[in-house]
Image 1: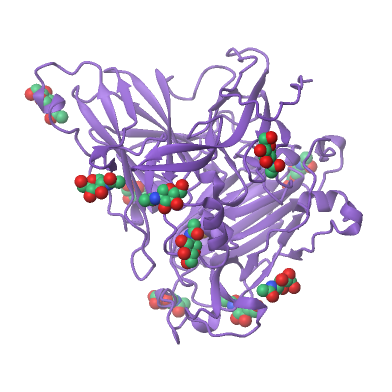
Image 2 (image 1 turned 90 degrees about the vertical axis):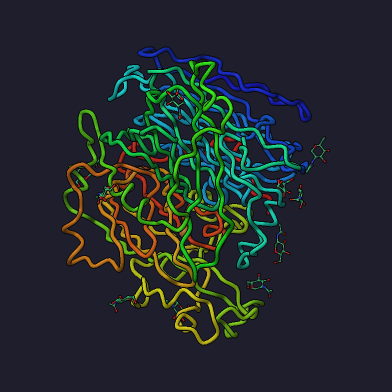
Length: 599
Ligand SMILES: *[C@@H]1O[C@H](CO)[C@@H](O)[C@H](O)[C@H]1NC(C)=O
Ligand SMILES: *[C@@H]1O[C@H](CO)[C@@H](O)[C@H](O)[C@H]1NC(C)=O
Ligand SMILES: *[C@@H]1O[C@H](CO)[C@@H](O)[C@H](O)[C@H]1NC(C)=O
Ligand SMILES: *[C@@H]1O[C@H](CO)[C@@H](O)[C@H](O)[C@H]1NC(C)=O
Ligand SMILES: *[C@@H]1O[C@H](CO)[C@@H](O)[C@H](O)[C@H]1NC(C)=O
Ligand SMILES: *[C@@H]1O[C@H](CO)[C@@H](O)[C@H](O)[C@H]1NC(C)=O
Ligand SMILES: *[C@@H]1O[C@H](CO)[C@@H](O)[C@H](O)[C@H]1NC(C)=O
Ligand SMILES: *[C@@H]1O[C@H](CO)[C@@H](O)[C@H](O)[C@H]1NC(C)=O
Ligand SMILES: *[C@@H]1O[C@H](CO)[C@@H](O)[C@H](O)[C@H]1NC(C)=O
Ligand SMILES: *[C@@H]1O[C@H](CO)[C@@H](O)[C@H](O)[C@H]1NC(C)=O
Ligand SMILES: [Cu+2]
């Protein structure tokens, strides 16, 4: 169906992508074809030349723009020294699990100096998504936006005049592969980003020897409507986003429409996307937009306060408006960095808008086939494979993160999906991946949200709950099963929120709450009328969130926290969905150029 480009000569650098056919609104589905060359370049910020791994020399990487129903073809040419995969975050990948790009889950990494072509359709979803690498922490610089526009050309809200990506990312001046290694053995307090960036610009709160870093500048014309497509691409934090002097109308999240609501502050969790409309209706001037990282208060370990800002600049500032041209722009009043209530309410206010109705909603309202209750927390393991050791912060043990008290072990030799597809016959029988069943509930009940569990101190209340094990946990679902998952954030050694992301499926977010989930009480609060559909749910700090989805996409789908450190520490599992009864519900064989597993 789609033409394959000739193999790239090694060393050939393609600086920009080519959109071969651009789909006209209302036209036929097209093929959107790009070449992504991954290599290392030096970029200068904060007086430092930093070697970063990027696509086509850009940070953030190129935008992938398509119309609903298009086929996307991306030739990935890996000229970096690392094995790379690219995940198309939020793309449903119906019957194309092989193209999901989850390292060691759906494929082995694309080795240095080799290429692989990702092919998938963007069908049945409209809005903002993003792509990022899915091996180690390299996604800090290997990411970009995906925009899927409606085929009809019309939105369920007045058409914005201008669409603007707003990608919140981190600028790291550390070796990200080592950072990832550090996380997997408990983390290091040194490992923080150097700055925050909006669309790759650090902004004027950062400087090199007193010379401010560039701001992202959005030039606006009075009266026009701007759709800001917010992406949180950071490894670490959730962000609050505001624009001084302007209201924001939330209209979409995770490439699903929402019932519009107006607010002055948006919370965007790690991995999440939020679409907002901003009308340029303020007095003509210059206004800051700002992104602030939130974090739980002490006794949680603290990271530095991170803020980045850009500028909204009106085209018609009067020449004599000295307050606008000579003074610094108006800065929005940001929530406190320890405020975790504003995000709770923000996410609680999201309701779904499905023009024509969502066919899966009647199904999730009915019978639920599988109930899972998953605790998200931290524990510890002994160094050197010992089975007993001192804990409570003693160096004989290191911290890991878990789901239901099992820390996820990424397979070493073969991807989960390949092992399943070939039944362990790969590599002369060495391709089998030993997996264990993810339990439906935690092995042990305790007061999950008791803040006395947070401090990691010898003899603390937590010490006795700490021991944890590692395994490759998967959970199998029959085709078309209706699944409910209640995620419970815990206070074990920390009290983070947990942005949980599921590949290959969108889910309905039915409810959230503070404290320990109690089915007898909390099922009554489920929104089965107009729940928002998402691929990432912000599980509140010291609270819970309930989701339901239909397991209608055969394959092996990663489920993980989108805080990179939690994922590297093991807060992950795999949902395996069986084939259905027909050819149209069966996962086709892998593409012939799927990377070989070398180890
Ligand atoms: C500059 O970046 C390099 C990595 O490219 C890092 O080793 C060094 O620590 C950085 N310096 C500062 C001041 O962050
Ligand atoms: C990839 O190719 C380049 C250029 O030919 C070479 O310098 C580099 O060593 C190769 N890398 C690997 C890992 O083979
Ligand atoms: C990793 O952890 C070690 C030990 O805590 C620390 O010295 C180092 O700076 C950390 N980061 C990197 C990128 O190596
Ligand atoms: C930024 O400016 C402050 C104050 O002038 C200075 O202390 C700091 O070193 C500067 N940062 C860099 C990276 O030069
Ligand atoms: C700047 O001054 C002009 C003229 O007095 C006024 O209309 C405008 O609102 C002021 N803008 C701000 C941001 O204070
Ligand atoms: C919606 O937000 C408002 C405050 O902004 C809050 O009072 C209300 O409880 C929120 N609704 C939900 C369901 O969280
Ligand atoms: C721990 O055990 C695993 C599996 O048995 C083994 O591969 C690894 O080398 C051991 N590590 C140490 C430090 O002994
Ligand atoms: C987790 O499992 C370990 C055994 O692997 C056990 O010792 C520990 O008590 C369990 N902790 C919790 C919180 O379930
Ligand atoms: C759990 O801990 C919290 C905080 O200490 C407390 O308010 C709550 O009553 C406890 N719940 C139970 C069931 O013990
Ligand atoms: C899926 O299950 C629902 C009932 O839960 C049923 O109505 C529907 O027909 C099934 N769909 C398929 C494709 O099997
Ligand atoms: Cu988490």
